[in-house]
Length: 202
Image (cartoon, rainbow, N blue to C red):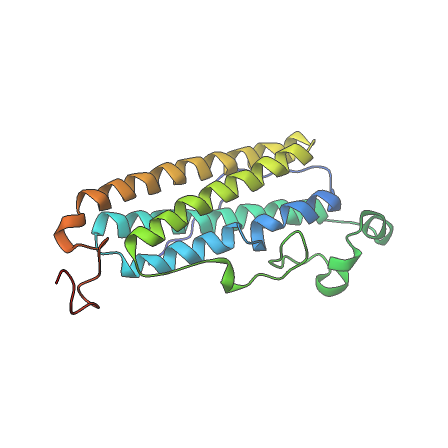
């Protein structure tokens, strides 16, 4: 059960609309390494986790990623609020506008709509944790690229916050991997999965 707090995890206060920047940042909503994929990845993977502390970590991070979806959506809304048709045409935002006006819709910067193929849930604790560590690094790289393109301090500030959270999540998944490795002999998850493999260890 979730309790929604009616405030962003970190404030977003963008004064100057910039549809060109919105076209870039939108990848962190609906792109392959974006926040929507991260939240769904972790909140689905947690059901197959054999250790309570790892399951709890996935729930915590998956929930925080939902807060990041909200932050990115707020950034996109503020970057595209009150645009004139001339500004939309001049910025190249018209291809998005024709389908979605200025509504928030999860797509990649390339224009590819969000798809569940962006995230993995394998049901194997080692595989999933390595997937998650890689995902956090890919998201961090995407934020690095956004910061290379963004000049507005009102945009850079929340993006820097989100980038830092990717680093923290990477570290926490590293902790989860260490917990798992310490317990490998309990259920022999790395060699095989006894719940599926009848000849496990023979």
